[in-house]
Length: 357
Image (cartoon, rainbow, N blue to C red):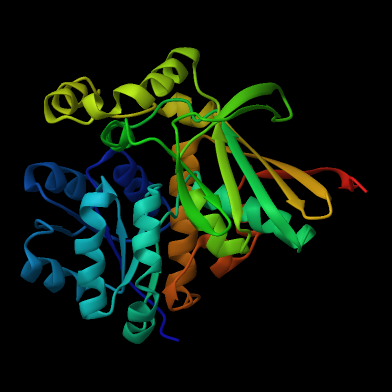
């Protein structure tokens, strides 16, 4: 395997991209910063003493010219349902590894379909190298390893706190689209917030509701478990809106309403103090056909802090020559204990194997 020496952060002027770029510098890494706007990218690059490139993803020539300069791209410019395909196409054409920080089911499914292309190109495609995919993916595989015959997996997270402009934009685009679970190996559409349950996150119990999060896709590829549901804790007002969207989804997806909602989204994300002091809580449960069930909990740093830590951890592994070609998920490529390499992460098994028989 080759040892890689440089990489590109595309969308480095965005909230999460900038966090990753600043942390990369602290680690002695020197990424190239990329994005659409020179007026946004250049000041950050000059401040950090880094090279930069500005180009649109529609500009295939400039995109591929830049990708030829690097061995790895971390794509941070969402919504990824609109941008990932162009970036991946470029990576496949020139032989550059692809990572991103998406949480969108449609993107994971589209990337999984390009597994053979990636293998032929000799590259790894790994979407979702941030929160919550890396922590939850590792938790899912950890539980699968403990109960190999598991047929049902439930995952939940809580404590995300503030949400960045980009994440809110993606969520707004998908409002009114309903929910999703995996049933018998297939992703199935369900009503928004169609199921709720009380979950013990350790420090407190919370009522969580189902959401169409990326783990519905990724956990299946990491564990092979055919039935998957993902939950999160939703404020009462937001839960009411989700339930209303079952009936008003058609209206919420119209262009005038989307434009109005997009204008209400504030720039930025959680401040440094919130990132430093925040925590995220995860819970998972597996069940097999005999009624055996196992649970585990996990505590991680604040969501965006976890994202830049896990993204850079995976980048460093690739720079050291550790990667698998084709479509990969974090836990599939690097194991269930990948998340334990992140400072501040604690994982706890709950109880013992319990059988209904």
